[in-house]
Image (tube, rainbow, N blue to C red):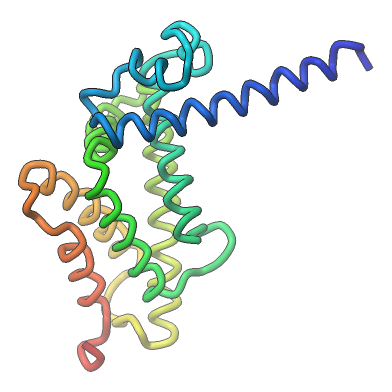
Length: 206
């Protein structure tokens, strides 16, 4: 084995740690300063780097912002214990965690704006965030679909809906409620999303 391999592995590991530190600082900056105040310069300063040093880890502003959204999702799902890859989530539990995450989003409008703006830009297949939004949407709908299917099996979810179709509706309403909230801050996003979960229950149990 080449003598430099251990050193290379050490440098790689340090690079991973530094990326994570940058993303943590970036989340703090956007939460504090908002989307418009979260320039590359501001984030670089928070991470104690030059702008060139910051972009060394991410390549471009768009790739940095995409990585910030990935980190946000990682933090949110970690706190909620929601990981669709490991287990099916009972719909009541999923409902509570989705509402909790949306309520938290109302406290960090800068991240909501970043998400919404990049979601539009990511329609371009060449945009760095395109794959992130496609993968995120697929994973989210998979969690919803499996929860709804399990709910239909145990009688807690009405049986006259298609789980995959309703999963798309849930995603659309959650994302759309955030856009409405950005335009009209008095909109209660949690009430809007929670209302759909209520409608998923069989009429006799509401």
